[in-house]
Length: 416
Ligand code: HAM
Image (cartoon, rainbow, N blue to C red; front, side, top):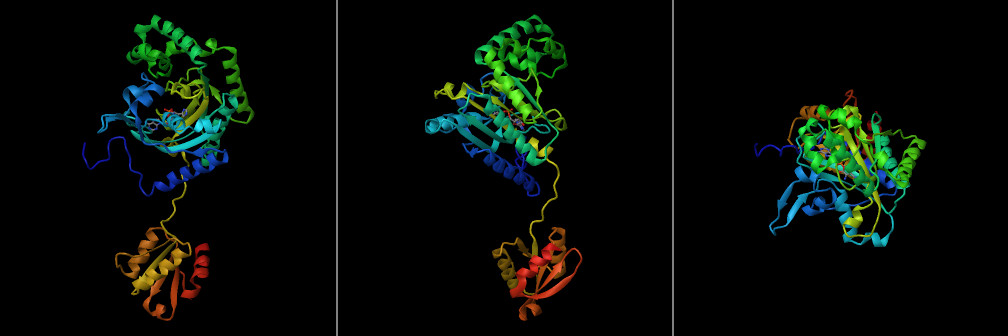
């Protein structure tokens, strides 16, 4: 540990990486707006208890991964491990659910989980997510998945699998959980140590285990489908069939349970084989009971979140952009060069000039290194005649033009 290193699992985003981030952020904003989703921003921290009662006390997120601290007033505070709970809190606190019966919201920002860092898994990471409040109908599940898929399409991310399952109503889920516990108790001693612990705390999560010892039992374990009533089956069928009908391929995974307790009915995950062990780059589902469990009205909801770092791993390469379009070089006339640069910026061009009092040759070399295509050279003699030089850095072609005609010349130089 060194205080000159970023905190373990947390990352700087360097200037050369930012264009890719900005591209994602732009797509999140544009596609959310196309679906009528509005942005919401909530604090980075909440009272810790908010997550205990929503994500669940026995989940890994709350049990092992939350960043917790006591503030100076003695309050237990958590860095947000996810956004959904905070968004529900905000809706209730501001009475938004009384103003409209349907809310479509999206969010983007950092979240924090104290997990063991590895490729695609960090302690500070970013999520983009969307939540739709107010519809119990499967149409809203379909819409939220269509939004996610539209974002992936816009980003050019094509190789992934969308896995779908249902957890039914809380009653059905509890019934299923009891069956699972009964099944796994029979073989308890043969399960991995972690699954033995989960058997007591969070038995559904045994289905998530990747441990080889657990696999034969997981394969034989009862499936949720058999515990579902007619309405839950119909809800699931509707989602499945509609997604297929709009050309979104889905894979039913009866063992998909998700790591958060608030889900009911539909759950889904986006999986990519390109990601290695942390192969889920997005996930979500329906959470009909959460708003009410916070003391609000019985408002059903569905949503999802993407892990932004994982999306970045999947994003096709794109050529980087130079820091500027124009390098204004000075040949013995630095003040005039600044004036020319300001003129170009006022006209909307991205222009930089030398700040290190370097020779003309060194300035042009620097411009070339930065990938800037055109230099405007402000030389003492030409400036006295009211002229500047334009130079194409790709081939060294240059010509003189009057300063007052600079803009059309720049436009022409930049199309070369
Ligand atoms: P989640 O599955 O816990 O769901 O997280 C969503 C996504 O965040 C994951 O699929 C993954 O890509 C990314 N993620 C999670 N942990 C990390 C990490 N340590 N490092 C990098 N990426 C990570 C939720 O958070 C729910 N709130 C989603 C939701 C919204 N459900 C309904 N509405």
